[in-house]
Image (tube, rainbow, N blue to C red; front, side):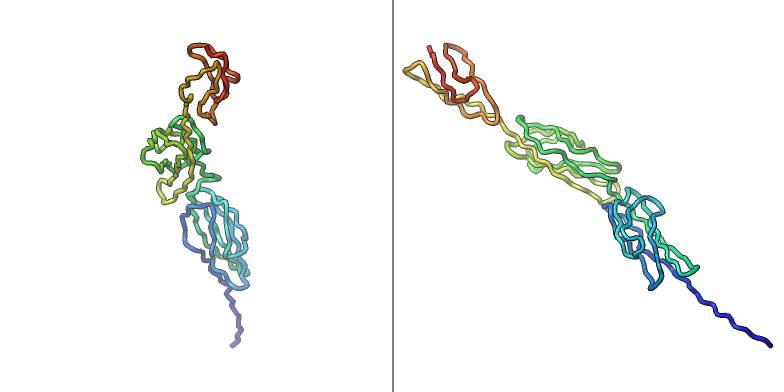
Amino acid sequence: IYTDTVRVISNRVNAYVSSDVTICSDEWHLHAVSYPEVPGIWTVTSGYGNIVDPTSSLTYVNDIAYGDNIFRWTVSNGICIDYDEITVTSTYPDRYILDAGPDQTVYTNSAVMQADLVPKDYSGHWTSYAPNIIISDPTLPNTTVYNLNEGPNFFEWTIIHDTHTCQFSDHVTITFINPVVNAGPDQTICTDSSFMLAVDPFPFSGTWSILSGTGSFENDTLYNSKVTGLG
């Protein structure tokens, strides 16, 4: 009888990553099981994402594309290789910055809103903090608002994903300045000149004109101009 021996060494490794996830962001932490002295590497097999440290089992990924993105963790021990994958579904619009539009100053009690267009798979909605304000169509980014209050009026533009709970908001202020025209009190004088007593129209400008009688303004655009030659 002749015998011999052989030694079989198993270098088997198993790759494990965390469960699939849906996020309201374009960034996430990838998490995989690591083994001492067994190298691993993250790769993108579908979609897009910037993996900060591909060789770390715990790493940060940013700039994740909208929709499904598949990240693979591969471990190797000699000739033994295994991998596992995680699907990160992002509902954050690609390279989108929510903007309710610029703040505005208006001189009538209405304004046209200037929010950005709604991204794919989202709907938008305007909200006013004043109950008397009328929003023509709250779902339009460029809707018209009416019945503004004097001074600042605050609005919120919110976009909500059609199938997930993701939502984002931005704010805008519409300031309504109501012009006040006050030419001052009537006067009875004993000379042929006087100073006008109108209210300063700032930030507006005004012009004096003579409707009847005679007279000459030293500066017909000055609210308290002197007028001479009264007859």
